[in-house]
Image 1 (cartoon, rainbow, N blue to C red):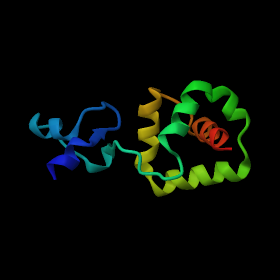
Image 2 (image 1 turned 90 degrees about the horizontal axis):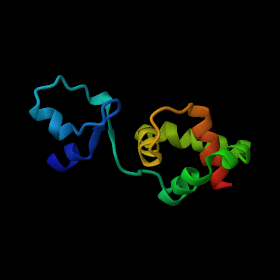
Image 3 (image 1 turned 135 degrees about the horizontal axis):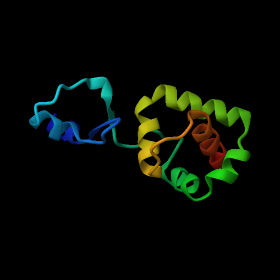
Image 4 (image 1 turned 135 degrees about the vertical axis):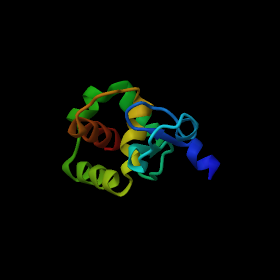
Length: 106
């Protein structure tokens, strides 16, 4: 249980659940995401490609792969926040991120 709480991070503040337990904060489970890549489809290598050339990849996206990436985000909701954290982005439009990932996969 402790290992899992060390891997959960708050969506907005980025603080670890294990730390928040000891600071007496009010904890809402839906506010934390699992900070590990849970996808076999969107690998860390693909995320690195998006980090380097996201503008060109967002233009190369194919409709079928866009739907596959959106489906992957639906299956693994924590994956969206994991990808944002790996890219180092704070704000991005959901559609742009999906297109950039789809372009990198195609």
